Every structure is written in C-alpha cells, then in structure tokens.
Image 1: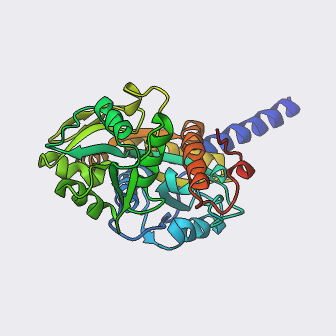
Image 2 (image 1 turned 180 degrees about the horizontal axis):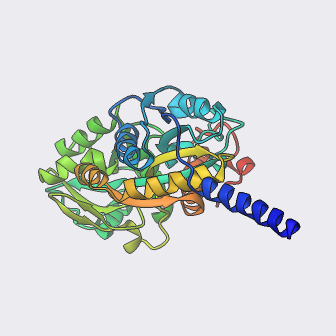
Length: 332
C-alpha cells in the first residue's frame, strides 16, 4: 500500500507539472522589437497585434523600434536575447528570407524563427485609369508589341515593385524598360501622370489612387483575390497566367526557435485571438491588405516559396551577395 501511495503522489506531481506547463503565462512584460522605423507596415501590424495579445496574455507588450540594416539589426538583437518567450520581433517574410543571401545575417536563417503572419499585402499590377490596357492579356500584348519600350515604374532597384516586374517578366517572357524612383509613392504618381505606363507597387501604396480612379488594377501577385475597400476585388495574376510565381509579403511576428513549447502554445492562442480581432480587420481594410492567420510550419512553407522567387531574382539582377543555393533556395 505504501508503494501505491508513493506512486499516486508521483503521478499527481507529474500531472500537476503538465498542467502548469500547458497554462504558461508571462510573469513580466514582453519586449517586441520592430526592426523598422515607426509608422511603417511592420510597425502598424505589430502594434495592432501587441495591443490585442496583451488582452489575452495579461501583460504589456511594449514595442521598441530598432531600424537599420534593412531590418536585420533589430532581428539580430531579438535573436540574441534569451529564448524564453519574453523577446519577440516583427517583420515581413520578404525581408527575413533575404538576410543570408544579402549577407546581412549570415548565421541566422529564416528557418531559425517561428513565424506568425496576420497581414498579407501584395504588388498590384496597375496602369493609368484611362489607359487602353484593360486586362492582363492586353498588358502582355503591349509588352510583346514594344519589347523593352514599355515604361514600368518602381521604388528602385531591388524594391518590391521592381521584383514584381521581374517576376512578371520571368512568367511571361516579356522585356520592359525599368524606371526607378526614390520610393513607392513617386513611382505610383509617375504612372498616374503618364510619365510611366505601368506600376507594380504594393497594394497599400496604390490603394488611394485606385479609389480615386487615377489607376486601374489588372491583378495582384498574391495567391488570392484582394478586396480593396472603396475600389473592389482584384484577382490574383495566376488566374490569367497559371505559371506566374506568387509574390506576396506577409507581415507579423517572429519568436526564436528554442523558446519553451509551453510558451509557444500560449503565444499561439494569443496570436489566434489577435488575428481574428476587429482591430486587425480595420487595419487591413485601411491598408488594402488581407487578414490571414499563418503560423508555424504553414507560415514557414509560405516563406520558402517567397524565398525561392525573391532570392533568385536578387541573384539574377546582381544584388545577391551569396548564392541562394547555399541556403537551400532553388533557382530554376
């Protein structure tokens, strides 16, 4: 009987420990490092998520902006902190998957993080509202009728709009004339004014001009339709060009792998609640983006797809510092 009693006590302790483990709650504030300046897409997404996750976790989540190195400095600082669930970072997958290839974080891979994405924004293929080009088929025909002459604006070499144009070029076999500007807004305005004929900047940069009927959207480069408030639905380019690679930027949170599993499970629940919140829905509506909820292996898989496309383009146009293949990216 004595042995049975001891066994019962031991089992009780085990189950008690398991219960405590499963119910992990933070005991102090959580630091969220945003590796970009305040006010950007990452910053806005992270602040919105933090405000909602605080309600679930019962702790404050102060956001600290640490810009520099295309976001790599803040990411490095977050990764070098103790992996205990109390230091997070935020970013877009389109940035995180380039840091090794660009030699900004040679020893920290995107695979070293647990990814949480709540917001999706994508390049939108746009022409002036009064352009004779009304469809993707019209656009491809125009490129092929005037190879290397159609002017495509972007925020600069290697920027999202430039990578979008290169992705489109690879999918269709067209050639174009790249006109770089010092930012997404000047690029968009140039197309509105007719200085350029096409712009493929991010949805949040073209939304206002679409609503004002200064631009016409032909397609977006994500894998799903994009509903732009006050304008309408913009279909995915794959609907017209099935072999077109997706180019979409997912914004959200990252915690380093090695964080205790019980903390990860609690963070998962808090993220699910935040991703379903009205606050995130309002932000997406304002920024012409889509609310998503991707985390863990599913989120990483999406990042790998973006990485294969973006890093190989960086190599092709001579920006990559390291061979993407060295980091497991497959260039076709």
